[in-house]
Image 1 (tube, rainbow, N blue to C red):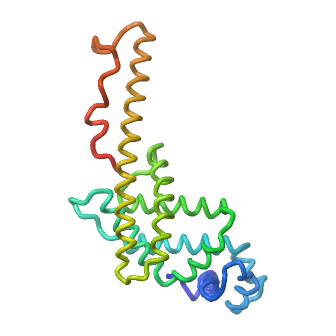
Image 2 (image 1 turned 135 degrees about the vertical axis):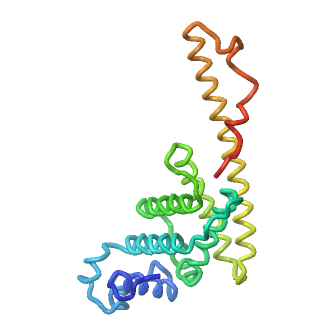
Length: 228
């Protein structure tokens, strides 16, 4: 996954090897430089911090997942497609599980830079599943998937089954909950939009369609096919 012919690739690989061997907080930039076989000056030309190295690792994982992403079946749902994409991501991360345990085990204060990288990753995972992220609801999906992914990753880190049965069960369960929650959100949004239109009509001194303007719920087309 890392191009070992490049200095950046060798630095990322060396960083993950060190993280797998010792607590992340004990790994220094000098350690990484020495493990890579370069000076700190050389390392500094590529990365200014350990967080930047982790961000580069995350982006490399994104790229590998997008390369491996299975082709969507014609009858697959967005939830099914997203399930396949995220399980592909866990497969890509498999060789680095011990390093990730070390890194996440030492995280005390959220790093804003890493938070932005995580959100960008989830944007691409949704895109790979054919789920739009350009609208306001799309941005909500990105944030929701980031929380879902972090939750399932905790299960994945403890799942030593080669088939990842616990991880798959946790992911399926969380995706179904997310789909239901988004469906409820869309119902609320539809009701608010209809209430806004009714209020606007009332303010202009007329009622839409001769009714009260507050029908007994959202139209079917506004709630069908709720996606995550």
